[in-house]
Image (cartoon, rainbow, N blue to C red; front, side, top):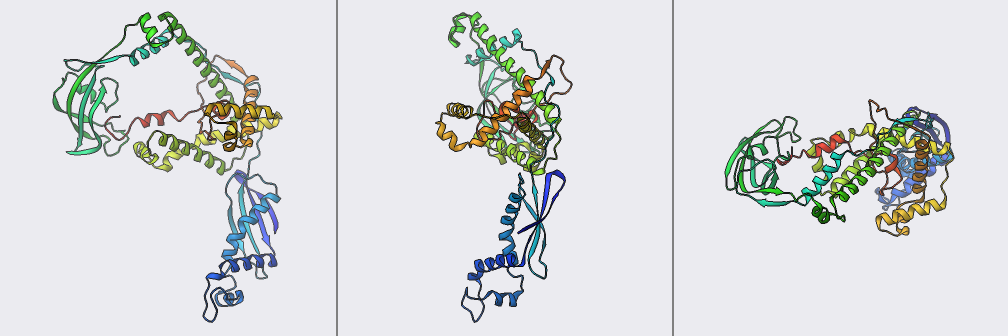
Length: 474
Protein backbone atom coordinates (compact mmCIF):
# COMPACT_ATOMS: atom_id res chain seq x y z
CA UNK A 1 0.00 0.00 0.00
CA UNK A 2 1.23 3.44 -0.95
CA UNK A 3 -0.12 6.86 0.03
CA UNK A 4 0.35 8.82 -3.18
CA UNK A 5 -0.74 12.19 -1.81
CA UNK A 6 -2.15 13.98 1.22
CA UNK A 7 -4.31 17.02 0.51
CA UNK A 8 -5.89 19.27 3.11
CA UNK A 9 -9.34 20.59 2.27
CA UNK A 10 -11.80 23.00 3.89
CA UNK A 11 -13.32 22.22 7.29
CA UNK A 12 -10.34 20.11 8.29
CA UNK A 13 -10.95 17.37 5.74
CA UNK A 14 -7.87 15.50 4.54
CA UNK A 15 -7.91 13.55 1.28
CA UNK A 16 -5.56 10.56 1.15
CA UNK A 17 -4.90 9.09 -2.29
CA UNK A 18 -4.08 5.40 -1.78
CA UNK A 19 -2.87 2.85 -4.32
CA UNK A 20 -2.19 -0.87 -4.35
CA UNK A 21 0.19 -2.55 -6.76
CA UNK A 22 -0.99 -5.31 -9.08
CA UNK A 23 0.22 -8.13 -6.83
CA UNK A 24 -1.25 -6.58 -3.68
CA UNK A 25 -4.63 -6.02 -5.25
CA UNK A 26 -4.67 -9.47 -6.80
CA UNK A 27 -4.15 -10.88 -3.30
CA UNK A 28 -7.22 -8.89 -2.14
CA UNK A 29 -9.23 -10.26 -5.08
CA UNK A 30 -8.08 -13.79 -4.28
CA UNK A 31 -9.25 -13.32 -0.68
CA UNK A 32 -12.63 -12.09 -1.94
CA UNK A 33 -12.91 -15.15 -4.19
CA UNK A 34 -12.17 -17.51 -1.30
CA UNK A 35 -14.82 -15.82 0.88
CA UNK A 36 -17.62 -16.29 -1.65
CA UNK A 37 -16.64 -19.32 -3.70
CA UNK A 38 -18.66 -21.65 -1.49
CA UNK A 39 -21.86 -20.06 -2.73
CA UNK A 40 -21.04 -20.20 -6.46
CA UNK A 41 -22.43 -23.01 -8.66
CA UNK A 42 -21.53 -23.67 -12.32
CA UNK A 43 -22.62 -26.78 -14.28
CA UNK A 44 -19.82 -29.31 -14.37
CA UNK A 45 -18.30 -28.24 -11.05
CA UNK A 46 -19.18 -29.09 -7.52
CA UNK A 47 -20.46 -26.14 -5.51
CA UNK A 48 -17.54 -24.23 -4.08
CA UNK A 49 -15.00 -25.87 -6.41
CA UNK A 50 -15.26 -23.51 -9.39
CA UNK A 51 -11.81 -22.06 -10.21
CA UNK A 52 -11.49 -18.32 -9.95
CA UNK A 53 -10.29 -18.00 -13.56
CA UNK A 54 -13.31 -19.89 -14.80
CA UNK A 55 -15.64 -17.47 -13.04
CA UNK A 56 -13.74 -14.43 -14.31
CA UNK A 57 -13.74 -15.78 -17.87
CA UNK A 58 -17.51 -16.20 -17.70
CA UNK A 59 -18.46 -12.97 -15.88
CA UNK A 60 -15.48 -10.68 -16.43
CA UNK A 61 -12.21 -10.09 -14.65
CA UNK A 62 -13.81 -7.52 -12.31
CA UNK A 63 -16.34 -9.99 -10.95
CA UNK A 64 -14.77 -10.04 -7.47
CA UNK A 65 -13.61 -6.43 -7.44
CA UNK A 66 -16.53 -5.06 -5.46
CA UNK A 67 -16.15 -7.63 -2.68
CA UNK A 68 -12.41 -7.00 -2.61
CA UNK A 69 -12.79 -3.22 -2.47
CA UNK A 70 -15.44 -3.30 0.25
CA UNK A 71 -13.21 -5.52 2.34
CA UNK A 72 -9.88 -3.77 1.90
CA UNK A 73 -10.75 -0.05 1.74
CA UNK A 74 -11.53 0.48 5.45
CA UNK A 75 -8.39 -1.40 6.46
CA UNK A 76 -6.15 0.42 3.99
CA UNK A 77 -7.67 3.77 4.95
CA UNK A 78 -6.94 3.14 8.62
CA UNK A 79 -3.38 2.10 7.83
CA UNK A 80 -2.91 5.30 5.85
CA UNK A 81 -4.36 7.42 8.65
CA UNK A 82 -1.98 5.84 11.14
CA UNK A 83 0.95 6.20 8.76
CA UNK A 84 0.26 9.93 8.35
CA UNK A 85 -0.39 10.26 12.11
CA UNK A 86 -3.78 11.90 11.63
CA UNK A 87 -6.20 12.44 14.52
CA UNK A 88 -9.58 11.72 12.98
CA UNK A 89 -12.93 12.85 14.40
CA UNK A 90 -15.57 11.21 12.22
CA UNK A 91 -16.49 8.69 9.57
CA UNK A 92 -14.49 8.28 6.37
CA UNK A 93 -15.85 8.63 2.85
CA UNK A 94 -14.45 6.98 -0.30
CA UNK A 95 -14.22 8.09 -3.92
CA UNK A 96 -12.16 8.01 -7.14
CA UNK A 97 -11.98 4.23 -7.50
CA UNK A 98 -9.68 3.30 -10.38
CA UNK A 99 -8.53 -0.04 -11.77
CA UNK A 100 -5.67 0.45 -14.28
CA UNK A 101 -5.39 -1.99 -17.17
CA UNK A 102 -1.95 -3.06 -16.00
CA UNK A 103 -3.45 -4.11 -12.67
CA UNK A 104 -3.66 -2.64 -9.22
CA UNK A 105 -6.18 -0.39 -7.59
CA UNK A 106 -6.35 3.19 -6.31
CA UNK A 107 -8.91 5.27 -4.43
CA UNK A 108 -9.28 8.39 -2.30
CA UNK A 109 -10.42 8.43 1.30
CA UNK A 110 -11.62 11.69 2.86
CA UNK A 111 -11.21 11.89 6.61
CA UNK A 112 -12.29 14.65 9.01
CA UNK A 113 -9.42 15.46 11.34
CA UNK A 114 -9.04 17.34 14.60
CA UNK A 115 -8.67 20.98 13.56
CA UNK A 116 -5.68 23.16 14.19
CA UNK A 117 -6.67 25.64 16.86
CA UNK A 118 -5.20 29.11 17.38
CA UNK A 119 -6.06 30.75 20.67
CA UNK A 120 -7.11 34.36 20.99
CA UNK A 121 -7.10 36.27 24.26
CA UNK A 122 -8.05 34.08 27.19
CA UNK A 123 -6.29 35.76 30.12
CA UNK A 124 -7.11 39.12 31.60
CA UNK A 125 -10.67 39.15 30.27
CA UNK A 126 -13.45 41.28 31.71
CA UNK A 127 -17.04 40.12 32.15
CA UNK A 128 -20.21 41.08 33.97
CA UNK A 129 -20.75 39.48 37.36
CA UNK A 130 -24.22 39.93 38.86
CA UNK A 131 -24.36 41.37 42.38
CA UNK A 132 -25.11 38.88 45.15
CA UNK A 133 -28.14 40.04 47.09
CA UNK A 134 -31.47 38.74 48.38
CA UNK A 135 -34.54 40.95 48.46
CA UNK A 136 -37.04 40.52 51.34
CA UNK A 137 -39.68 39.67 48.73
CA UNK A 138 -37.66 36.58 47.74
CA UNK A 139 -37.72 35.34 51.35
CA UNK A 140 -41.46 35.99 51.48
CA UNK A 141 -41.97 33.93 48.33
CA UNK A 142 -40.09 30.99 49.84
CA UNK A 143 -42.14 31.14 53.04
CA UNK A 144 -45.39 31.47 51.12
CA UNK A 145 -44.36 28.43 49.08
CA UNK A 146 -43.82 26.51 52.32
CA UNK A 147 -47.25 27.62 53.56
CA UNK A 148 -48.78 26.49 50.29
CA UNK A 149 -47.15 23.06 50.52
CA UNK A 150 -48.49 22.68 54.05
CA UNK A 151 -51.98 23.94 53.26
CA UNK A 152 -55.21 21.98 53.58
CA UNK A 153 -57.93 21.58 50.98
CA UNK A 154 -61.36 21.99 52.54
CA UNK A 155 -64.60 21.28 50.65
CA UNK A 156 -66.86 24.33 50.60
CA UNK A 157 -70.53 24.82 49.68
CA UNK A 158 -70.29 27.92 47.50
CA UNK A 159 -69.57 29.08 43.98
CA UNK A 160 -66.08 28.67 42.56
CA UNK A 161 -63.71 31.60 43.10
CA UNK A 162 -60.24 32.27 41.76
CA UNK A 163 -57.74 30.20 43.74
CA UNK A 164 -60.21 27.40 44.49
CA UNK A 165 -59.70 23.78 43.46
CA UNK A 166 -62.46 22.43 41.25
CA UNK A 167 -62.86 18.65 40.98
CA UNK A 168 -64.48 18.03 37.61
CA UNK A 169 -65.10 15.85 34.58
CA UNK A 170 -64.63 17.36 31.14
CA UNK A 171 -64.73 16.26 27.52
CA UNK A 172 -63.82 18.41 24.53
CA UNK A 173 -65.37 18.36 21.06
CA UNK A 174 -64.17 19.95 17.83
CA UNK A 175 -66.73 20.12 15.02
CA UNK A 176 -68.90 17.82 17.10
CA UNK A 177 -66.22 15.11 17.38
CA UNK A 178 -64.35 14.27 20.60
CA UNK A 179 -60.61 14.84 20.15
CA UNK A 180 -57.72 12.84 21.68
CA UNK A 181 -56.45 14.17 25.00
CA UNK A 182 -59.58 16.27 25.53
CA UNK A 183 -61.20 14.13 28.23
CA UNK A 184 -60.61 13.93 31.96
CA UNK A 185 -62.47 12.50 34.96
CA UNK A 186 -62.23 13.63 38.58
CA UNK A 187 -59.52 16.10 37.66
CA UNK A 188 -58.42 18.63 40.27
CA UNK A 189 -57.91 22.06 38.72
CA UNK A 190 -56.67 25.10 40.62
CA UNK A 191 -58.53 28.05 39.15
CA UNK A 192 -56.24 30.88 38.07
CA UNK A 193 -53.00 28.97 37.52
CA UNK A 194 -53.54 28.94 33.76
CA UNK A 195 -52.95 25.21 33.40
CA UNK A 196 -55.74 24.73 30.88
CA UNK A 197 -56.44 26.37 27.54
CA UNK A 198 -57.13 30.13 27.84
CA UNK A 199 -60.79 30.80 28.57
CA UNK A 200 -61.40 27.39 30.16
CA UNK A 201 -60.77 28.18 33.82
CA UNK A 202 -62.41 31.61 33.68
CA UNK A 203 -65.73 30.06 32.66
CA UNK A 204 -65.77 27.86 35.77
CA UNK A 205 -65.81 30.82 38.15
CA UNK A 206 -69.28 31.22 39.68
CA UNK A 207 -70.25 27.57 39.10
CA UNK A 208 -71.15 25.22 41.95
CA UNK A 209 -70.79 21.55 42.77
CA UNK A 210 -73.34 19.40 40.97
CA UNK A 211 -73.67 21.69 37.96
CA UNK A 212 -73.36 20.28 34.42
CA UNK A 213 -72.86 22.71 31.55
CA UNK A 214 -71.05 23.39 28.28
CA UNK A 215 -68.44 26.08 27.61
CA UNK A 216 -66.98 27.40 24.36
CA UNK A 217 -63.18 27.55 24.06
CA UNK A 218 -61.07 28.73 21.13
CA UNK A 219 -57.61 27.19 20.97
CA UNK A 220 -54.70 29.62 20.35
CA UNK A 221 -53.55 30.01 16.76
CA UNK A 222 -50.04 28.98 17.84
CA UNK A 223 -51.19 25.87 19.70
CA UNK A 224 -48.74 22.98 19.34
CA UNK A 225 -51.35 20.54 18.04
CA UNK A 226 -52.10 21.75 14.50
CA UNK A 227 -55.41 19.84 14.50
CA UNK A 228 -56.68 22.13 17.27
CA UNK A 229 -54.77 25.37 16.63
CA UNK A 230 -57.18 28.25 16.08
CA UNK A 231 -60.23 25.94 16.32
CA UNK A 232 -63.48 26.65 18.17
CA UNK A 233 -64.32 23.81 20.55
CA UNK A 234 -66.93 22.93 23.16
CA UNK A 235 -66.33 21.28 26.52
CA UNK A 236 -68.96 19.41 28.49
CA UNK A 237 -68.28 20.05 32.17
CA UNK A 238 -69.50 18.44 35.40
CA UNK A 239 -68.41 19.90 38.74
CA UNK A 240 -68.10 17.30 41.50
CA UNK A 241 -66.85 19.48 44.33
CA UNK A 242 -65.31 22.84 45.19
CA UNK A 243 -62.38 23.10 47.60
CA UNK A 244 -60.55 26.07 49.03
CA UNK A 245 -56.98 26.13 50.18
CA UNK A 246 -56.47 26.99 53.85
CA UNK A 247 -52.98 28.20 54.70
CA UNK A 248 -51.40 27.71 58.14
CA UNK A 249 -50.89 30.78 60.33
CA UNK A 250 -47.53 32.45 59.85
CA UNK A 251 -46.05 32.29 63.34
CA UNK A 252 -43.44 30.49 65.43
CA UNK A 253 -45.59 27.35 65.56
CA UNK A 254 -45.52 27.24 61.78
CA UNK A 255 -41.71 27.47 61.82
CA UNK A 256 -41.54 24.57 64.28
CA UNK A 257 -43.88 22.44 62.17
CA UNK A 258 -42.08 22.87 58.86
CA UNK A 259 -38.44 23.20 59.89
CA UNK A 260 -35.84 22.55 62.54
CA UNK A 261 -36.13 26.11 63.85
CA UNK A 262 -38.08 27.33 66.87
CA UNK A 263 -39.00 30.79 65.64
CA UNK A 264 -40.17 32.41 62.44
CA UNK A 265 -37.22 34.81 62.61
CA UNK A 266 -34.76 31.91 62.64
CA UNK A 267 -36.56 30.33 59.69
CA UNK A 268 -36.36 33.56 57.70
CA UNK A 269 -32.66 33.87 58.52
CA UNK A 270 -31.94 30.32 57.31
CA UNK A 271 -33.88 30.94 54.08
CA UNK A 272 -31.95 34.15 53.48
CA UNK A 273 -28.66 32.29 53.94
CA UNK A 274 -29.64 29.60 51.41
CA UNK A 275 -30.83 32.18 48.91
CA UNK A 276 -27.54 34.07 49.27
CA UNK A 277 -25.61 30.87 48.58
CA UNK A 278 -27.74 30.24 45.50
CA UNK A 279 -27.31 33.82 44.32
CA UNK A 280 -23.55 33.58 44.75
CA UNK A 281 -23.39 30.32 42.82
CA UNK A 282 -25.50 31.79 40.02
CA UNK A 283 -23.34 34.91 39.92
CA UNK A 284 -20.15 32.88 39.68
CA UNK A 285 -21.71 30.66 37.03
CA UNK A 286 -22.81 33.59 34.89
CA UNK A 287 -19.39 35.23 35.25
CA UNK A 288 -17.60 32.08 34.18
CA UNK A 289 -19.98 31.47 31.28
CA UNK A 290 -19.39 34.97 29.90
CA UNK A 291 -15.61 34.54 30.17
CA UNK A 292 -15.60 31.17 28.44
CA UNK A 293 -17.84 32.54 25.71
CA UNK A 294 -15.35 35.32 25.07
CA UNK A 295 -12.39 32.97 24.98
CA UNK A 296 -14.18 30.45 22.76
CA UNK A 297 -15.30 33.16 20.33
CA UNK A 298 -11.69 34.30 19.96
CA UNK A 299 -10.27 31.02 18.67
CA UNK A 300 -9.49 30.33 15.02
CA UNK A 301 -10.29 26.80 13.87
CA UNK A 302 -11.60 25.20 10.68
CA UNK A 303 -14.12 22.94 12.41
CA UNK A 304 -15.19 19.79 10.53
CA UNK A 305 -18.91 19.13 10.19
CA UNK A 306 -18.41 15.74 11.83
CA UNK A 307 -17.60 17.34 15.19
CA UNK A 308 -20.77 19.45 15.11
CA UNK A 309 -22.91 16.48 14.05
CA UNK A 310 -21.48 14.38 16.87
CA UNK A 311 -22.31 17.11 19.38
CA UNK A 312 -25.83 17.37 17.92
CA UNK A 313 -26.21 13.62 18.39
CA UNK A 314 -25.33 14.03 22.05
CA UNK A 315 -27.81 16.86 22.55
CA UNK A 316 -30.70 15.01 20.92
CA UNK A 317 -29.85 11.75 22.68
CA UNK A 318 -29.85 13.58 25.99
CA UNK A 319 -33.30 14.97 25.28
CA UNK A 320 -34.56 11.52 24.32
CA UNK A 321 -33.11 10.07 27.52
CA UNK A 322 -34.67 12.81 29.64
CA UNK A 323 -38.05 12.22 28.02
CA UNK A 324 -37.79 8.47 28.58
CA UNK A 325 -36.95 8.98 32.25
CA UNK A 326 -40.03 11.20 32.50
CA UNK A 327 -42.14 8.42 31.05
CA UNK A 328 -42.64 10.10 27.68
CA UNK A 329 -41.57 8.51 24.41
CA UNK A 330 -39.38 10.87 22.39
CA UNK A 331 -41.63 10.37 19.36
CA UNK A 332 -44.61 11.47 21.45
CA UNK A 333 -42.63 14.48 22.66
CA UNK A 334 -41.94 15.49 19.06
CA UNK A 335 -45.66 15.21 18.30
CA UNK A 336 -46.42 17.51 21.22
CA UNK A 337 -43.86 19.97 19.85
CA UNK A 338 -45.34 19.54 16.37
CA UNK A 339 -41.87 19.19 14.81
CA UNK A 340 -40.00 16.48 12.97
CA UNK A 341 -36.92 14.87 14.46
CA UNK A 342 -34.74 16.73 11.95
CA UNK A 343 -36.40 20.09 12.68
CA UNK A 344 -35.90 19.52 16.40
CA UNK A 345 -32.27 18.63 15.81
CA UNK A 346 -31.64 21.77 13.76
CA UNK A 347 -32.78 23.94 16.66
CA UNK A 348 -29.55 23.12 18.43
CA UNK A 349 -27.04 23.42 15.60
CA UNK A 350 -25.81 26.80 16.77
CA UNK A 351 -25.52 25.53 20.35
CA UNK A 352 -23.63 22.48 19.15
CA UNK A 353 -21.15 24.63 17.23
CA UNK A 354 -20.64 26.86 20.28
CA UNK A 355 -20.06 23.78 22.41
CA UNK A 356 -17.45 22.43 20.00
CA UNK A 357 -15.64 25.78 20.01
CA UNK A 358 -15.69 25.80 23.79
CA UNK A 359 -14.24 22.30 24.01
CA UNK A 360 -11.53 23.13 21.48
CA UNK A 361 -10.62 26.30 23.33
CA UNK A 362 -10.34 24.61 26.72
CA UNK A 363 -8.28 21.74 25.34
CA UNK A 364 -5.94 24.22 23.65
CA UNK A 365 -5.59 26.31 26.82
CA UNK A 366 -4.77 23.14 28.77
CA UNK A 367 -2.08 22.40 26.20
CA UNK A 368 -0.73 25.97 26.17
CA UNK A 369 -0.58 26.05 29.98
CA UNK A 370 1.03 22.58 30.15
CA UNK A 371 -1.66 21.40 32.55
CA UNK A 372 -0.94 17.96 33.97
CA UNK A 373 -3.16 15.77 36.11
CA UNK A 374 -1.76 13.75 39.00
CA UNK A 375 -2.81 10.24 39.91
CA UNK A 376 -4.00 11.59 43.26
CA UNK A 377 -6.40 13.97 41.47
CA UNK A 378 -7.70 11.12 39.33
CA UNK A 379 -8.28 8.92 42.37
CA UNK A 380 -10.08 11.75 44.16
CA UNK A 381 -12.33 12.27 41.16
CA UNK A 382 -13.23 8.60 41.00
CA UNK A 383 -13.93 8.59 44.74
CA UNK A 384 -16.14 11.67 44.43
CA UNK A 385 -18.13 10.17 41.59
CA UNK A 386 -18.49 6.91 43.47
CA UNK A 387 -19.99 8.77 46.42
CA UNK A 388 -22.37 10.75 44.19
CA UNK A 389 -23.71 7.66 42.44
CA UNK A 390 -23.56 5.25 45.34
CA UNK A 391 -21.07 3.01 43.54
CA UNK A 392 -17.65 1.67 44.32
CA UNK A 393 -14.67 3.46 42.71
CA UNK A 394 -13.95 0.25 40.80
CA UNK A 395 -17.45 0.25 39.31
CA UNK A 396 -17.04 3.87 38.23
CA UNK A 397 -13.68 3.07 36.66
CA UNK A 398 -15.28 0.26 34.69
CA UNK A 399 -17.81 2.69 33.18
CA UNK A 400 -15.62 5.77 32.86
CA UNK A 401 -12.20 5.51 31.21
CA UNK A 402 -9.24 7.16 32.84
CA UNK A 403 -8.66 9.22 29.68
CA UNK A 404 -12.08 10.85 30.09
CA UNK A 405 -11.35 11.78 33.71
CA UNK A 406 -8.00 13.28 32.69
CA UNK A 407 -9.60 15.31 29.90
CA UNK A 408 -12.30 16.66 32.21
CA UNK A 409 -9.82 17.61 34.91
CA UNK A 410 -7.53 19.34 32.42
CA UNK A 411 -10.42 21.31 30.93
CA UNK A 412 -11.68 22.33 34.36
CA UNK A 413 -8.17 23.51 35.27
CA UNK A 414 -8.05 25.50 32.04
CA UNK A 415 -11.39 27.14 32.86
CA UNK A 416 -10.09 28.09 36.31
CA UNK A 417 -7.05 29.76 34.76
CA UNK A 418 -9.32 31.87 32.57
CA UNK A 419 -11.56 32.75 35.51
CA UNK A 420 -8.84 33.52 38.03
CA UNK A 421 -7.07 35.91 35.65
CA UNK A 422 -10.27 37.80 34.79
CA UNK A 423 -11.80 40.99 36.10
CA UNK A 424 -15.44 41.31 37.11
CA UNK A 425 -17.52 44.34 36.17
CA UNK A 426 -20.92 45.48 37.38
CA UNK A 427 -21.80 46.85 33.94
CA UNK A 428 -24.36 44.49 32.46
CA UNK A 429 -23.82 43.74 28.74
CA UNK A 430 -26.56 44.19 26.18
CA UNK A 431 -26.29 40.55 25.13
CA UNK A 432 -25.89 37.68 27.54
CA UNK A 433 -24.53 34.28 26.61
CA UNK A 434 -25.36 30.83 27.83
CA UNK A 435 -24.14 27.49 26.66
CA UNK A 436 -26.25 24.43 26.04
CA UNK A 437 -24.96 21.54 28.10
CA UNK A 438 -25.51 18.30 26.22
CA UNK A 439 -24.00 16.20 29.04
CA UNK A 440 -21.21 14.80 26.95
CA UNK A 441 -20.59 11.90 29.31
CA UNK A 442 -23.00 9.50 30.95
CA UNK A 443 -21.96 10.79 34.37
CA UNK A 444 -22.43 14.25 35.85
CA UNK A 445 -19.20 15.89 36.95
CA UNK A 446 -19.34 18.35 39.79
CA UNK A 447 -16.42 20.19 38.24
CA UNK A 448 -16.33 18.85 34.73
CA UNK A 449 -18.26 20.04 31.68
CA UNK A 450 -21.28 20.77 33.88
CA UNK A 451 -19.34 23.58 35.52
CA UNK A 452 -17.43 24.48 32.43
CA UNK A 453 -20.42 24.70 30.11
CA UNK A 454 -23.58 26.09 31.62
CA UNK A 455 -26.69 23.99 31.23
CA UNK A 456 -29.48 25.37 29.08
CA UNK A 457 -32.02 23.04 27.56
CA UNK A 458 -33.43 26.04 25.78
CA UNK A 459 -36.05 28.23 27.45
CA UNK A 460 -38.28 28.26 24.40
CA UNK A 461 -38.28 24.49 24.19
CA UNK A 462 -39.01 24.15 27.89
CA UNK A 463 -41.97 26.41 27.38
CA UNK A 464 -43.12 24.38 24.40
CA UNK A 465 -43.18 21.20 26.47
CA UNK A 466 -45.99 22.65 28.56
CA UNK A 467 -48.08 22.97 25.40
CA UNK A 468 -49.14 19.39 24.83
CA UNK A 469 -51.82 18.16 22.49
CA UNK A 470 -54.34 17.54 25.28
CA UNK A 471 -56.74 20.11 26.63
CA UNK A 472 -55.03 20.35 29.98
CA UNK A 473 -52.15 22.49 28.77
CA UNK A 474 -51.88 25.58 26.69
